[in-house]
Each structure stands twice: as C-alpha cells, then as structure tokens.
Image (tube, rainbow, N blue to C red; front, side, top):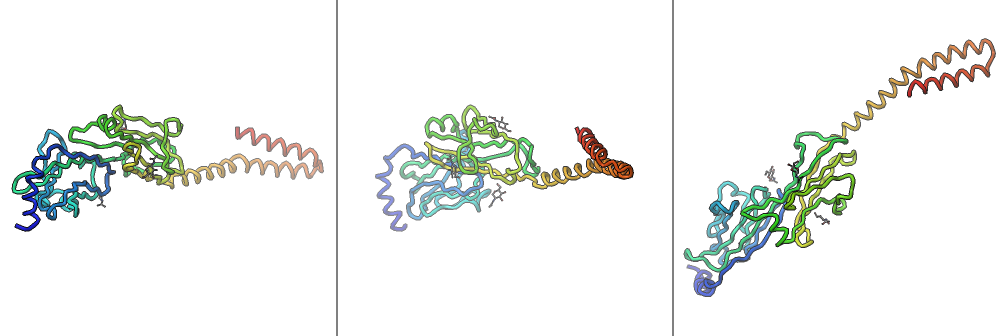
Length: 290
Ligand SMILES: *[C@@H]1O[C@H](CO)[C@@H](O)[C@H](O)[C@H]1NC(C)=O
Ligand SMILES: *[C@@H]1O[C@H](CO)[C@@H](O)[C@H](O)[C@H]1NC(C)=O
Ligand SMILES: *[C@@H]1O[C@H](CO)[C@@H](O)[C@H](O)[C@H]1NC(C)=O
C-alpha cells in the first residue's frame, strides 16, 4: 500500500461522518465535449468511481470503477481528468441524466457523493437533413433541453433560473414581436419552436438557441439549414426565358406590323400619320400584356 492510501485511511475516519450530497448542473449542447467535475483528486483517482443514471427508476451503470473505465459501449469517448472529473467527448442527448462521483477506500465510501446533472441542448428541424430547403418554404426548428433522472424542466426553471431562447446572427434574443418568426414554447419552458419562412439570405444560415442560467449564457446549440441556392438561380433563368417568349409572341409581330405600315406610309409620304399609328400600336401591345 502506498503512502497516499495510508494517509487516506487515517483521513477516512474524519470524512466518514460527513453526509449529504454536493449537486451541480451542467448544460452542454449535443456534439460538444463535456467535463463533469468531481473535485476529489485523491491518490491519482484510484479511489474514484463514476456512476450514471439515465432514469431514476433504473439501476445505475458504473462507468468508472476505482479509476478504471468500465463501460464498454462508449469506452473511447470517456476519460478521467487529472482532477478525477469525467470527460465525455461528442456528447449525445441520450447521455443526459445524473452522474455520481464517489470515493471508495477498502469498500467503504469516503466523504459525500458529488452528483452532476447533465442537461443536453439539441436542435432539430421539421425538414429532414437530406432534404434541400429553398426560399419560400416554411420550416420549424425545435430547440429542446434534454434532462433526465426525474429532473423536470419546471424544477430547473424554478431552482436554477434557466431560460431557453432563440438568438439572431448578432446574438440578440429573438422576440415574439418580430413578425418574421413565430416562437412557441412548451408549458414547461424546455422546448422552444421557431417557425419561419425562409428567405434567400438564409442560405446556409446558422440558427442558434441559447440557454441561460440566472442570466448567464451556459451553452448554445446551432442548426444549419442546407438550402439550395440553385433553386433561386433557376427561378431567375425561368423569368428571363418568359420575358424572351413574351417578347417573341407580342413584340415581334408588332415590329413587323410597324415595318409594313411604315413602308406603306413612307410611300405615301405622310410621316405625321405614321407616328400616330406607331403610338397606337405600342399602346395596343401594352394592352395585350394586361
Ligand atoms: C459525434 O457523434 C455523432 C453521432 O452521435 C456522429 O455522427 C459524429 O460524427 C460524431 N463527431 C465526432 C467529431 O466524432
Ligand atoms: C447567445 O450565445 C452566444 C454564444 O454562443 C453569445 O455570443 C450571445 O451573446 C448569446 N446571446 C444572448 C442574448 O444570450
Ligand atoms: C414543436 O415542434 C415539434 C415538431 O415540429 C412539435 O412536435 C411540437 O409539438 C412543437 N411544440 C411546441 C410547443 O410548439
């Protein structure tokens, strides 16, 4: 047994009496790397275990046992920090829940549990990601905070002062008064839907949803709508073709007619009269358009 452990055995008698839990809330967006703090770096984390509860009614899964990785499914995405914090790379919304850091010395718990509630922010779209979006289409983006292990959003709003909202490209909060956007929230405030009709300038725009805890930004989740700029280009091409066709159908016969009339009138040397007819013909063409 090394010196560190020996020292702890003596310390354990002091720590044994402490009760209660140390709770923290961590907010992260899906796809990011997260660090869950334990702040109990003891003996190179050889005493540290990390358990995970997705649902409060199910048994906990041991991710780290006495400093060693246990979970096989997500093994390569998990690591233990030098301060015994649990690092999860590229976190998914399914990984929300409660993570508990606990120290064991010879099967006896040392000190209090550190309970970290992980909440994951995730944005989804009403259109599938493979679908190309073009201007004029209406889309709904849904921003949701995923929590678990019996934590309700109402609790979070009340006890942690969290708020979820959409921001524009300058990072300014979007409000319901902006007529371009329809914003609706679930009654528990953990889902915020943004509905808008896409404009040309929204091409590949990043839509951002922020979460604040007591007015401090915790994280933001983004969604990029891949729109096809080509649709607008082809629309312009169609418009140009239509103008050419219209010109061919209406203007060309008018020009031919004018030429015939002009050449006849020119023969009669009555130039004033021919001008009148020309004006009438152009006017007639305009009428045809309407
Ligand atoms: C993160 O995970 C998602 C699936 O959950 C995967 O599609 C993506 O490629 C991963 N990203 C990285 C950087 O590993
Ligand atoms: C939203 O979050 C971004 C960081 O991702 C920040 O720059 C911006 O100021 C935040 N906006 C608000 C209104 O909190
Ligand atoms: C948000 O949008 C989703 C999917 O489009 C829908 O199922 C849900 O009911 C909407 N929620 C609110 C509060 O508008």
